Length: 314
Picture 1 (cartoon, one colour):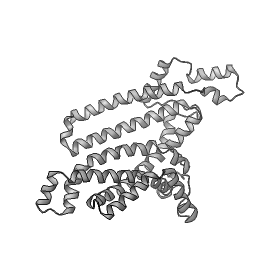
Picture 2 (cartoon, helix red, strand yellow; picture 1 turned 45 degrees about the vertical axis):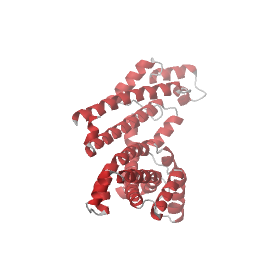
Picture 3 (cartoon, one colour; picture 1 turned 90 degrees about the horizontal axis):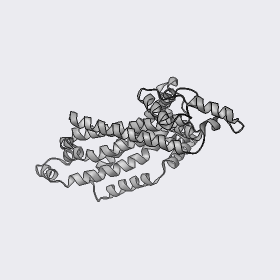
Picture 4 (tube, one colour; picture 1 turned 90 degrees about the vertical axis):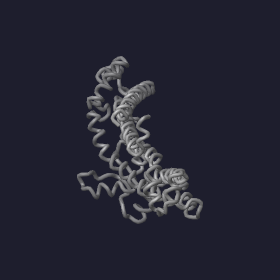
């Protein structure tokens, strides 16, 4: 198991290195000068040149890349061009919103999807299966931003049960803060639950056709025990794959939802940094999100080995 984990760790580090090179290179060729954008259209060339030197933008590309990546490894992400504060402070402040939002959305989608997938698989071809998968198909087709606006209209404008947007901060108390994350989490969880339910159903149907399942049924085991004790564990390989991808999407793909609900999270920070040409923030946030995806995938790979020891030799 140790060799299996070390192998996955090495692959993760190599992937992160290539991702950092791609992110840095792409942002370097994007048109626009951060110094000119910060100083405005009336700035003199001397002022722009002085600011570029101050921010290190005139250094060679390799020097800038290795300086940035060394700082990233040591926890020094640099200083934001726009906010003039350390990027690590911005990321920590915004992650305190995005991370709980992603975890809450993943919990909701899992709590809904897995029981629905098991329910549909156990009734394959029946009306209940058709209805459950029909609803799941609608969930896949509906854009999450439209679903978010619908939730705002119903629960915030019409029923006035929750705030329409904004985040009071954790200093206001756990319940007020969590209350402001409920609707965004539901909006994010809707699509993910629909996808996960379909994957769970498909994986279970595939497993239920295996010989050992027929043997378990021939021994007289009840259907509930066959599903939960024998079939579900083997179907979890496919489900874990989707869960890992979904958590990465929920953490990195919240730009639209955070803007709809006016949440000060990583997605909104990334959007603002792109519009303001704050390269150091964009680079750091994107690579940090890539690192998070890699770590989640490594944990999923380790979970594979725990569920099915045969996979450890790969």
